[in-house]
Amino acid sequence: MAGKKVIGVLALQGAFREHQAAIERCGATAKKVRTREDIQKADALIIPGGESTTMGRLLESYDLGHTIVERSRAGMPIFGTCAGMIVMAREIPGYQQYSLGIMDISVRRNAFGRQLDSFEAELDIRNISDRVKGVFIRAPFIDRIWGETEVLCEYMGKTVMARENNLLTVSFHPELTEDLTIHRYFLSMI
Image (tube, rainbow, N blue to C red; front, side, top):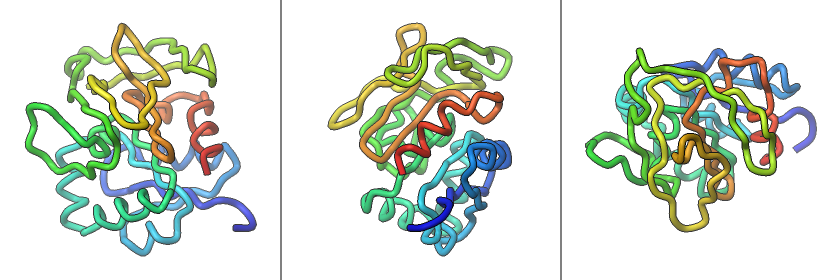
């Protein structure tokens, strides 16, 4: 495809505006995604942080899940942050909630604590950067991976970033910092 890539940002709930701004600062075109047609027009998709239960209900209500799953199977790069990680996971132990089930990971919700336990940390991302700021807000972590999923970053012995082919996910919020390292890495997957 000639020209700038179009990065869809799921804009049902959560930190979609911040992701749009980060993508634009990287030189790509960011578009809000709210319909199946929006997903079809995107070269890649970001599922932002927010509230995973609400996001799942909205994905079902707007009938977007099936289209996202189809596009992921066709190779479209998808990047989930925080709640996006939960929505992408194949397993969410202890919770009966909607999930796309597209990534071979098991995710623990709110694993680093409640809102009051939010924090920032310097992270070493394998083969990407040894100094990325991670903003953790009611953050999940990955407690198990399988298949072709690879761990890209751990913090305090917990997996907080992983990739499976065209799928990328993080526990933290790169969109809430000025550092574009993670967004640039995602764009390189397209």
